[in-house]
Amino acid sequence: MTQIRDELAQVARLAVQGSDADVRMYLSRLVRRYRTDDPALANDLSEVLRRKAPQRPDRVTPNGGAPSTASASEDPQLSVLRSYASTDPVDAPVLASDLEGQLHRLLVERARVNDLARHGLSPASSAVFVGPPGVGKTRTARWLASELQLPLFALDLTAVMSSRLGQSGANLRYAFDRAKAEPSVLFLDEIDAIAKRRDDDGDVGELKRLVTIMLQEMDEWPSTSLLLAATNHPGLVDPALWRRFDMQITFDVPTGHELDAAIIRFLGDDEGLAEYAPLFRTVYEGKSYSEIERNLLAIRKWRVLAIGEPDDIVADVLATSVNAMSKDRRIALASELQQNSGLSQRRVSQLTGVSRDTIRKRVKELV
Figure (cartoon, rainbow, N blue to C red):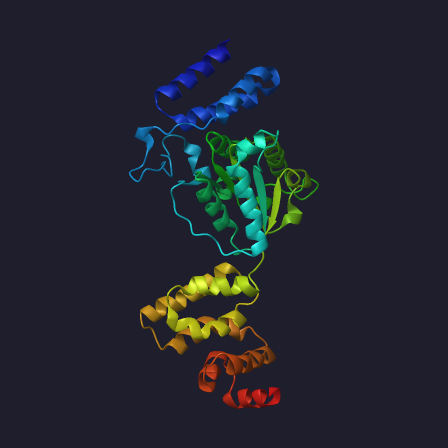
């Protein structure tokens, strides 16, 4: 009875303070605590948490959205999570058509939850993104949250991992409790760092305990929220955890139409760079979206600031990628540009570092 009185008093204090999210988070903890001792009470509390909390007028930002972050004074563990308001605009990522189809199905399931419920079905509530760095996994997570009009919580792994024994697990539980306190999207980037296979003898007990916590939290994850994870190394993730994800979505570097679409997106309204598109397409084959965006935005900025001639700017930014090519590959690139891009022989030579004589010889051989 003493414990129950303390818990009721704590709920009352949080409610009086107007801390809606904190109330829901505390109730999530009670659900976990009573799941064994009092399953009926745990189910009742879970049902309460499934209801979307009404937005309080005094907790609305000037632009009409929910606050994107909370004050550190409300809870010192808030540093574990980075938060983004549901009103934060996010541009749709450039994705392959099959990947777009998977994400569209995920959004449709979340939008038609009532139709599924009538047939005893639930929408996908978790997905893991697999792919190399820079292919849009994080941006896609933010875009999905924006499309669903839900706040996004991104787990800061550096904040979760603590040198204090047992604190890392407490940090991880806090992150899940906070995300479950209201309908939201929780994004766990580089999940392999905290969810490694438990048969890895090289890992310490603390990391294995984190996997156990992750398994427990995923088993209790509510269908009202969406759990997203990302990894560059799927083989490192514990198989038991891997099987709990409803969807496994693979991201790849852009090729073909996706590469062309990325180049067009990142060039924006700078029509003066359109003639370099064949060069960009060849140089950036096999590169990540983030590298393509970073380099093309640098070219655009330098053109706006008139830092050199256009050919010099393009050549300078692409120098690292072009110089990394073999001699034969650079010659092939130069001859391809000479034949298909409309650039002069002098400009092709300047951009690729291949002499004009070599370009002439190669083009004659191909004719």
